[in-house]
Amino acid sequence: MNRFTTMIFLLVAAVSGPVEADTRWQYKTGGRVYSTPLIVEDTIFFGSGDHRFYAVNKDTGENEWSFETGGAVHSSAAIKDNLLFFGSADGHLYAVDQESGEMVWKFASAGEKANGLWDYYLSSPAVDDNRVFWGSGDGHVYALDAATGKLHWKFNTGDIVHASPVLYKDKVYIGGFDGHLYALGKDDGTLAWKFKTVGATYFPKGEIQKAALVEDDVVYFGSRDYNIYALDANTGRGKWNLKQPQGWIIATPVEHEGSIYFGTSDAHIFYSMSKETGTVNWTVPVNMRVYGTATVDRGTVYFGTFDGKVMGVDHASGETRWEFQTESSKRNYNTVYDDDGKFREDFKLYGADYLTPEKMIHALGSILSSPVIDDGVIYFGSSDGHLYSVELP
Image 1 (cartoon, rainbow, N blue to C red):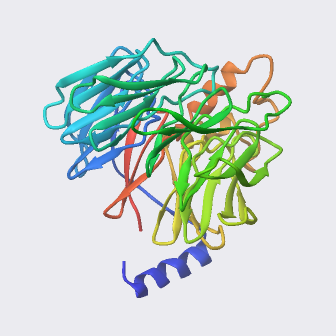
Image 2 (cartoon, rainbow, N blue to C red):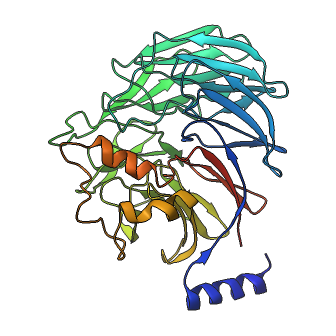
């Protein structure tokens, strides 16, 4: 898109509202897709709740191969030397050949478990040099040989670790359901420092559910204690924090031009903040939770919501520029929302029966997957079981 075309697009958006998009292709799996797609050349790799890990052609949406595990694959993949690494709810970390989909090795943890209904993700591995790092529901952080799966070291946090490790300089940064953010030595797993979240009345542990963002020697992460934190990456000392009193902050922040962007859980708000000071630039109300990480492309911030939409907002103003809605969302929206986009009077999000409304929300094609953009196309998974490919304007 050249400058003239971009100006025309922005003018049209300003006059007529957000541009709506059509599906390029969609690939159907047998379970919900929470994982973030990994694109390698012409293939897109992702996991599904149907216990399978998939390789799909990114241009046609045709299946190249799939690999079956013993549990839901709500872990995203990492790649090193033609090996794909991903975790499964069967308690194993798998290494699978990129071309054939054949297993090269698997490593067994002491077993997986979940922390309640909203513990949707598994830890996604990170790979560096010849080692792969991974967290598990058994409470450990593992470092394994990438070629063989041999254990180098493990670190016990004492509680579920479903956040994904982040590698920065000589350390591994990872949070857990015990409410600590850990900085571990990459070589031997020794503890450099740990930071305890403040906690909240009903969530005293201040659980950390997803990955941190580490940039310019600062660690940014959210917690179930309603806070987003910024810590010195070298010492673990606080730089700033912001408490959002209405709900958890699960989403990993993304950085762009000096600001960080992230969504919230029950507050139903998307934030832009100064990464230096923690002051709020702007907020955008949304109709449902945002758990996935946003992505930024050509000045537009894209993120998915639990009501089955992907939004594209201007990074400077927060103005909505683009929108995609799943067919499931279009079909079932009025079971949850009224004509004004508010919850129906007969819909209770958190009541004695909280399972039924949660199923109704996922019937909208909730997007917990973090979108990925490649060559002007956005890819993401949905609770309706599809991986979507949608062309951007």
